[in-house]
Length: 118
Image (tube, rainbow, N blue to C red; front, side):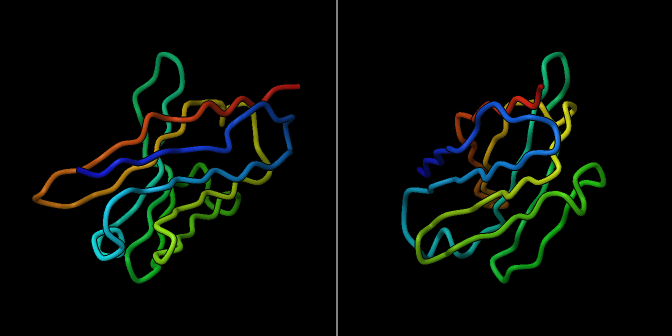
């Protein structure tokens, strides 16, 4: 079993920045093997993909956040981060950390609320 715990959410004004963190339990080997990602879910909407990073550091982003958000990981610390800049009201959502273990299944954190409002 893997536990993912997000932190760093909060209230920020439009144009501001936040850095989300996700701490994973379990072995460093397992953490370093799999793709880590961030998703978000706004009220009344489906959960959507935001960003992902492979074990080797290759990244992929949703068009809606490309150029504003940056995903990174520290395998030694079993951490994944999401730096969010130039935040917009439409970025308001619960943000979830995700680990994709392929055929073994996947794991989700409990989520952290991000609210962008003046």
